[in-house]
Amino acid sequence: MAHLEAMEQMRAVSLTVFRHRRLSAKPLVIVPLTMAGEAGAPLAAMAGTSRTAPKLLVVAQPRNRDQRFAFAADLGRIVMNYIDSHRLHRREVASRVEGPTSRYTDAPQILVPNPGGIKALIDLGRMCRYRKAEGPYPVAPVVPQLGMWLTFLAETAEQAGTSMLLPVTGMLAEHWATGQSTMEDQNLASIMGWIDPPEGLSVAQAIADAENPAVCPPAGPATSPEFDKTYLAPAIRRFDDTYARGDIAATAAAEADLRELIGEQIKPTWRLMWAAVSLLRAVPEAPRTAARFERDLASFTAYSDYQDGGGLPQRKHDGAIGAARRLSRLERAQADFEADMAFDDPLALADRRSMGEAFAGVVTGAEPDRVVTTAKNRRVPRPRITVTTYDPVRLAPGVTLISPSMPNSHKALIIASVPDGASTQILVEVTGGMGRGVVPLKGSVPVLGQHMDYLPDPGWRPTPVFPEPDSMPWTHSSPADDDPDTNPEDNAAEEWGNAD
Image (cartoon, rainbow, N blue to C red; front, side, top):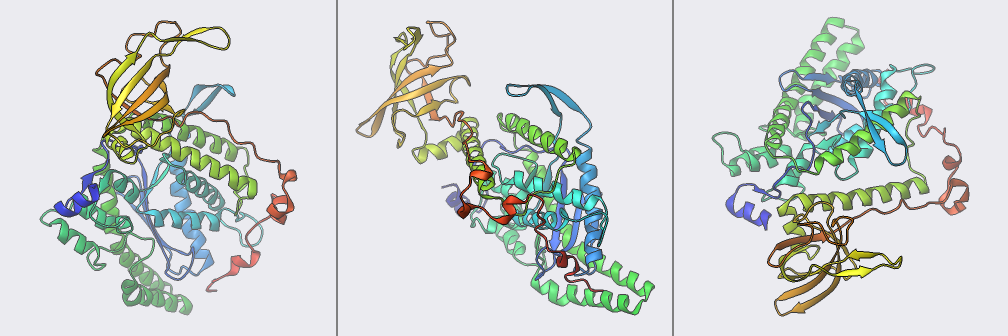
């Protein structure tokens, strides 16, 4: 409905009341560009933590191995300096499993224009993390370090609710609905045209300009084919010709021209990135974002300590058990994030209510003094209420509920759901958040006439138990599973595409 409203009114419509992603006070913005037709070959990047002081890095010949890794080293110094700036202060925290421990007080946040930008960083991380600083084809020590950190950040970006590596278009689309398709929302200029068109332009004019690469160059990682053919390819050929002749002055001039050419392509995206950050910063942060940030801090601290202890690069592919663990972790994070959004945000809750995954209504019946005796012969309060709702309800009896209308500790259970004409009578038993006595604490039990919102509690669940590697059947194992030090990169790949 929000998308239809946006299309009819030709303006973006808010999907949420809050911003459900943390936005760092000082994010590192990276706009990567890659070489068309060359998988994983970086062309350029603009990076920095200040809108007015970006650093432009350019690979004059992306097929040249030495230039690729010189680029990776330059970008690595920027990224690692930024990451290291968050590894200065730690604080003590309590852990139920480990007892007293410590974690960093802040975590890095890298912003890229779109999901393609994350893919470019994944490819760069894969290219870098297996390289060595000594032996044949040595690289700068920061290169494998960059590769491992980019891979770690990319893996966290898969997990719902984390905020260490984010596409800006995803953050915008999470908060605003536009009148265009989901794929079109990945165009930074286009989605910004719906939300905040340039001064003097209508939304229709802004999105038309966004589709014109001459007016709004693509936000990467790929450049416009017309730009590649007309400007980029001739500029790279001029650099190659002067480099082959050994003309140092002409080579420097050709490289400067190439930097200027690419800079003009990437600067509009850089400006849009910071404009989007300003828009997002004006949206209030959801209350439960702070708790998810604590999980980011724990993850960042754990991986940082692992690296400080001489950690190895990540494997190219997960084994069967690793893939199952990753899938379980991602499913759990998705369920938790969706529940957090609905708990914090009335618009997100309304979305789930429309699908029958939550309900709201008025308390029309109550047994506030109901007490039961447990199997251990202990008397505990178990009040019951009846909620009359006009929402479609697809929650079965036995589902545990939480409520943004009550204190955070409030827990309830669906006992029965009975249709009654256009409404539904839902019998709910309150099971938690009432204190330790037989008489519930004041305000812990809904009263007659009170409006209530309920949604399923993702709750705590134990980590699934997976078999040990030596217990896996041969159908699910491979030689790489038996050798954790196997290098998935072929040595010949070092020489691939080297112009020399």
